[in-house]
Image (cartoon, rainbow, N blue to C red; front, side):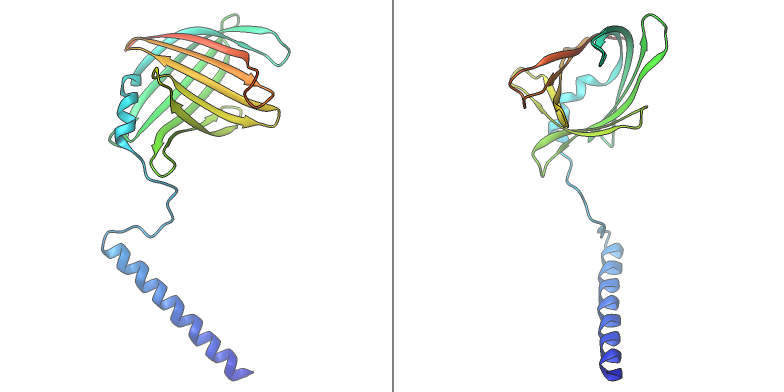
Amino acid sequence: MFIMDRILIKTTVMKCAVIAMIAIQGILNGHGVMAQEGRLGKDEMKKLSHWVGQWEGSGWQMQPTGERVEFNVKESVQSKLNGLVLIVEGKGTSESSSELGHDAMGMIYYNVDNQRYEFHSATMQGMTTLAEASLDEEGNFIWSFDVPQGKIQFTISLTENTWLEKGAFSPDGGTTWYPTMEMKLKKSQ
């Protein structure tokens, strides 16, 4: 058994050495050796280039209690990584108390391998979402994700100077939709 253990150890060491040599060769040749999640597409991101800028406005959202709350919001959109991603940062305050109620940041990119836009976001409450997104035939950006009770969807309609976003909830997989939020913004810069 001792001889078999030594052979197994030598074989394992040789395999590790070969893998290390391949990795080193890849690094020296300028190739990454880390696993990748997908390739990003710049051409599709050009369709969202008019989002870049500072946006301000107001809106409303439905609370879980059914109460409608008015808010003011600012959105900042920046193009990063030579146009491969958009960084979207939003801050919203209650119209009645000026208390910060919405503080979120997201990254939008086009995943070439999945052939879709993806919107990865995080909120001040510590929640994250990786949402699938698309552009419809009118150019509206629609992003959605599943929740245990159903599905949430947002539709963003942008012109050169106006941002209209509507949110909705569907408890039945998309057959019936209930409005949850709406905001109207103007480009300030």
